[in-house]
Amino acid sequence: MEKLRRQPSKRKQRLAWAAYLELTSAAQWMEAKLRTPLDVFGVSREEFRLMVLLHRDGRLTLSEAEGRLGRIRESVQVTIRRAEEFGWVRRGAMHLPAAECGVSRLPKEMRNRPRLGRRVRTIELTPEGKRLIERVLPRQEGIARSVMSGLDSREMRTLIRLCGKLRRKNIVTELKYASELMRAGEEFQREERAGESEG
Figure 1 (cartoon, rainbow, N blue to C red):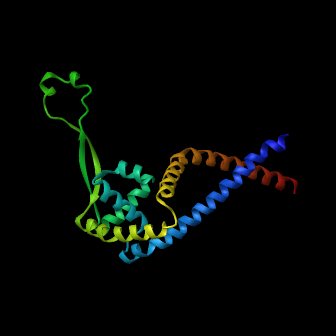
Figure 2: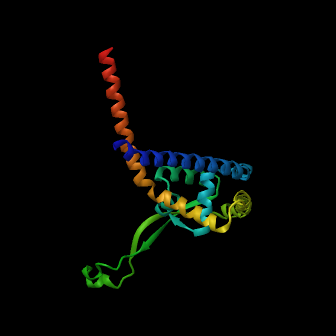
Figure 3: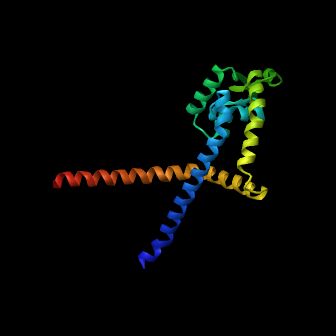
């Protein structure tokens, strides 16, 4: 009975592994196709993603860029620094709008004065960065359209939705995977120690 219960889990695990291999293989194949134009212009994939984001959304705070790129702060900072060295992006700062809550607690003479919110660091494209994106992005979009030509519009929308779903679940999966990996490592070390003491 116990063996029967485990089978669906093992089947799902094998299916997940097969799906992972197909997804990574497809991603590597697509990456290789899209890599050439970036190499010609001397732009890394991370720098290009950052510049496309800034081209599409305009000036962003650093925390907004980190969130939308789905990468940790240190990694984004390295990308920004490199793009800044090439003159493609520039840093700046702005004040967020002041929160209205707590105005009644201010002294009367300060209540009607204009107030500034918290100061945050920002990044935006330079004119040179805009020119570069306007030259490279159409080429990348053309290659992507060619690479995706085997899928119809409905399938592409489904792919976008599924990839987004995978990324959103990623944090929970990473935590679960990390704890499982730690347990497996501890078990392995215990077995190694037991083997050494027997030997």
